[in-house]
Image (cartoon, rainbow, N blue to C red):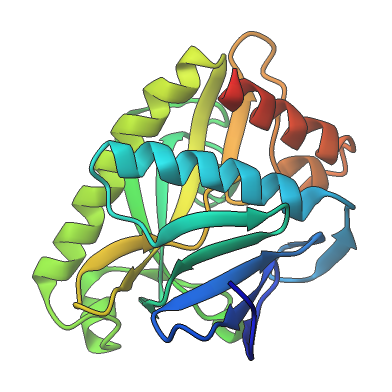
Length: 236
């Protein structure tokens, strides 16, 4: 499958059209950004690692009955997937308090939450990705119906119920993660984008070591090694 026109370039990926109008190619970049693009860098090989990690996790979810846009991995940095209409809602699933949740609400960093928390953010860089409630999402017409929000929230929890125990068997706590959804050509809501250490937080169960993009956000170093460790654990 060959790339034709560049459809979109974001912080972490380029999206290319193909000769098939129903299929796109995501090219995973080595760029790193944090704090809404205020901190920027690059790490050679990061894009390939995210592509491979996302591939394995999309395969896992597909096999468990979660519909995704994934079709196949093409090479180190490129993934073939279905064309979807992006729903401009970032879905954050939290199992352990950290990051903005601790900062904004004063919940102790590292505290296990009494239940899985699902939050919505407006996918809008100019506004700083503000928090959304269901009424905001409907007023902004990000979806048409309350039932669609209910489905997104339900599927996000189902994904967590699959990934959390999976990573536990790999010696990792799935602290929190960000999901994106879209409409396929039949207007079904399916999982899109990626699932990788760029949008998930992984802590080693025994040491508490952070194996995700927080190593870049917090200036800890060793990001590529951490991403390689996540991939190795997934594969073994």
